[in-house]
Image (cartoon, rainbow, N blue to C red; front, side, top):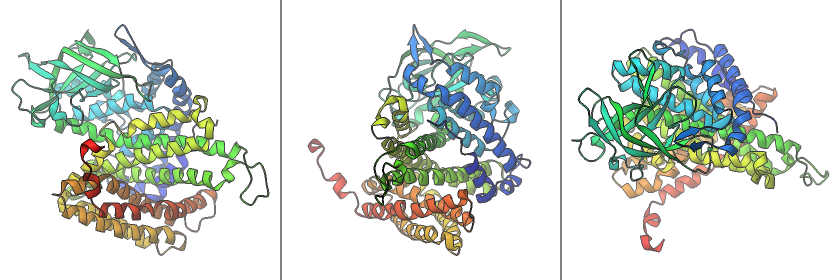
Length: 586
């Protein structure tokens, strides 16, 4: 099959023509010299790394998997070398703080790099992604000593990071965790406990591995208010920055997983491991959520990345595979891409992918605005929009991403079920994205119960107004009129559903029953918004790139956006039928 091709043309289109990247950068402190031309050049190089270094070891890494031998984790052949190449090329510090050796480039480039790594090798992408998230938590919450000790080498990627939250009896409800942190008296602590599902918990890349661990102090109250965050390195660090003795932590076992086999997912035992408090005692979740929110956006992008790679492979196969008669019956055999159902599967995936990438770029620009804009009000507004959209991006991108991987596999027919074609790996790998970093059901509950009420509903209503203005403007352009008017109708219905949810926040059964349907509806309306913007820009152009955008926008309008009507009806029907059946009758 054809190798993965990084979507650099689409990235350039979004940055240069949809989101006025150069203009946005001019308003952000420290980014004044960053422009779309530079960004596209960086992405071209990222694409070469993904295609040339990561994709070739993806299937072999899945088949070999990571192993545990006498307490030592070994990653598949080529993984350590690929990571060394990644670090030496400077990719680890792409968006990192220049104070600690990072390149300080905008977040949007980081997320687009994450997409490419997910397309080429999801197991690999977790190593730098988790490292970046851990570094952000340290940068925001740790004291200067910890920052100076760890951030430079984490920013470069020389040292990696992991977050240790989950325990066998404490998953989503972290208030149940039992890992203990005993003060030593010199400012350090001893961690005692076991964590499960720890991605990148150990490996054979060399360097240090910095664990951020949630634990309880001896006098901590029960529940989430008693949780603190601690930093525990695999190797203690000497005064001169060199690595010292190995810390008292060990890998009890590796999880045997459905997918991401090359990624070592560890059971970690902390047997009196030396650690240091990060942030305030009892405020561990607050500190950890700095990392988790960054990771949730990254996971959403993973869903997008897998979908992109899967659809590329399926489209290439469909153009070559000869089977059956043409729709008019005049020709046989024909490439299966001539069959309406195959076309529908490919177009469904492609119409999600390109809208999702646009929404990801818009969200990332809001993140940079929240960090760097000179006006406080603008920063706050952007930060609220990121908070609102984080669960939407995480859940919807991974739901649609998994569905797209399944459709791409289906295009291959029986060959899609056979390992050598690689499609079944996409399906297996994509499945975890719907689960880790907070299941998608939890993301949907977060959206309806915590994010919608932000500013008494003012944040979501402000987003709706932005959408409406863009849609109304695009409706005046003939080539974009169909998607604009369809999106306006969906938005109107979605606003009504949103007001109902805001008015019934105290009804846990209603909001809980509506949550996942609402999250999907939210995503579809956002995708319609993005397609409206893209169709307006492509209107009147005759080259293949713009014509393709117009056709995809029409497909989304006619075949995808109508789902919002059914979702609205399901939400309106309430939770009575959900809660009616006695538990023992399931």
